[in-house]
Amino acid sequence: MEILRFHPSGKETTLSIIRRANALRIVAWSNVNWLERPDRLSRAVLASALGGSGPAGALATGAGRYPTAAAVVDEAGSVTYRQLRQRSSALGGELRRLGAAPGVAVGVMCRNHRGFVEGLVAASATGADVVLVNTAFSDAEVRNVVASENIHILLHDDEFEVTARTCGADVTLRESAAAALADGGRSVVRSGPPGRLIVLTSGTTGRLKGAGRRPTGAVESAAAIQQRIPLRVRDTQVVAAPLFHAWGLLHLLLGLSRSATTVLQRRFDPAATLEVVVDQRARVLVVVPVMLKRILELGPEALVRADVSPLAVVASSGSALGAPLAGEVLRRFGPILYNVYGSTEVALATIATPRDLQRAPATAGRVAFGSRVEILDEAGDPLPPGATGRVFVGNGMRFDGYTSGEDKERRRGLISSGDMGHFDARGLLFIDGREDDMIVSGGENVFPREVEDLLARHPEILDVAVVGAPDEEFGQALVAFVVRRSGSDLTAERVREHVRASLARYKVPRRVEFVPDLPRTATGKVLHRELPVS
Image (cartoon, one colour):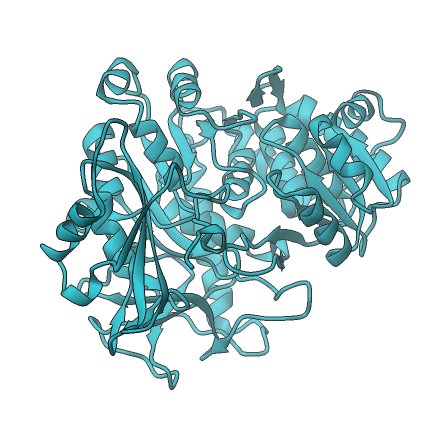
């Protein structure tokens, strides 16, 4: 476990300087390709120094090393690193003319395609704060985000034209217009210090909040990932995870900085994603757990037919993976699954390698480079291995606080993740559930996630969510929302019997509701507020 200390004021200490030096060493070593011309790496280093940090710097690094290589492949074809940099620079010049500058917020509401990348890099290069807007938001939610984040310019896909008209932004720029400006912009922008990247929290149980982060921890993020996950220079990576969330965004930026080819699709479709992995001979697939679940649901025949032999990394994060799904992915695809635990606020906390997951499929992994993870009791004191408590995380990559001025609880220089968990004797972290998910039923503490994992293994259950609800007899009791597999005649009593056979009686759901599907966010988190609990 990496033991690091953080000064409460945020000032650098000797240990943080050493940590940064180690991060640079890890990233440099991970980006060495002994078979390439030696001038390529030196060009990348020079481009990185001149391009600065943030998205524009990541693109400059990749373009300096392999300018004619494909940077992005989407439904419109491929665009090279040189072309992507030229187009982003031209668009950045036009955004600056429209008012983008340090202290100004630019929103990007685009699906996964080159337009998102160009808009992100262009806006960041002006020094503006970039707000990543979820493409699944309703008109009311978009208006709320524009107002709360004070968005001046909104870049959006053509399909969101109606939403954009009433969003309240001073300037709206649709995808086709932005592409035209990138094609023939009258001015270019020279990258300066980037502003904040603002990712909106998923809002599964409460109102949306913007989590701001400056790119000062970019090198540590790259080191944490590349120390455990074997990413390489010039990888072909299929990023199915949404780019407007931290997980997809991280891999986009990591891909740009190592001159990878990033393959994007506007909408996730399990069959289409599997097909593009095969057609592009992808080495890396970046997903959220629900996407893995949908791919597995294609069935054994489809999976056997797909030649995914070049695939060396399936990187998953964004929501709980769960032991049943982890085990099934390892069986179907082999030891190439990596599970990353963290959040928009605390950044990377732990990483589980295939070996970790083979030993303990439910684990969230070991503490990542540059991070410190502690399990604290209610008084804020550390708990020993095996004891369940509140998960707190510290590193140089954590967020600056919410844009509203609110913050997460901080103790011992660490930030609350909002989860309950424990370490085992081997140093593996296990997440037992969310703090606000735990219920007290008849005087017993119950974590719904344990019941969810058990039910997810049932052969007749396609999807499941377990939540707490008020109960006159026990104070609180569990309610299971179950999606049956096609053709199943599973009954509520059989569901309860399945739980009763493996867990304590107080963990058996009092109610079982059969539903056609579960409401989920783009990263696969269940929207508990939309479940008919009462």
